[in-house]
Every structure is written in C-alpha cells, then in structure tokens.
Image: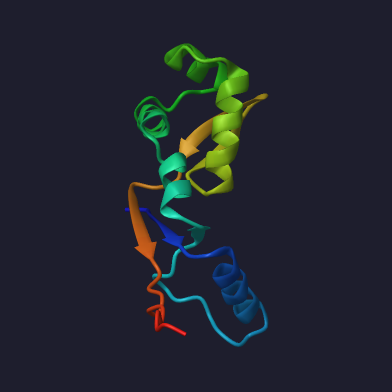
Amino acid sequence: MRTLRIGIRSHEEAKARLLAIACGEASRGENEPSVWVTSLGSLAQLLNAGNMALLDLIRGQEPASLTELATLTERSVASLSRSLAKMEEYGLVTMIEQGRMRAPRVTFDRLEIVVVERPPVNRQAA
C-alpha cells in the first residue's frame, strides 16, 4: 500500500524544517509528510469533492491519455491539465509517457493528513 502523507504547517515552519534538513542539522523522519500545505483551507481546496472524484476515476479507469480522460469526465483537456498540474505539484498524481501521449496515474492508495502541533499562544494581558 502506498501512503501519501500531507502535513499542515506554516510556510515559515516548513522552510525552517527543510533548511535544517538541507544543512544536516536534522533528518527527515520515516513517517514525516513528504507534502506540506499551509492551512486546512488550502488542503480542502486541493482535496475538494471534484478533485477526489477525478482521482477515483483515474485510479479506476487508468485512462491512456488526457484526451481519454477528457472524454470520461466531459471536461476540456485544458481544464484537466490545470487540475492535474496542481495535483502533480502536491504529489497526488504523476504523468507517465505512453508513446506520444501523457497519462495521469494516482500515486497513492492511502492518504494521511498530519497536523503539526504548535505551542500554545500566551494570551496574558499587557
């Protein structure tokens, strides 16, 4: 089973973590997410009902090309290309070469969401 872990943390936190790993001050944990988003809202946009249905269709039908996927979804190739580019950016799909055509494939069987715990905010009055 291929598990894709998506983590939620601020841009600053993600950048600091990546820099620490790049500088050798930290190492990526075995179960640490490989994909990061900055908020639950951005994750909700990425995993909206339409995108989840598209992922299910790709997984089930394994279309041989974007043209075939456009026919299956009744969407334009341009619209699908934009959606799939964003999904590919976040590691949800990969595009494979099939002769002269490209075809999307879902990269995971299971999706895990990891929310990085943040320290409590001190709200003492000044």
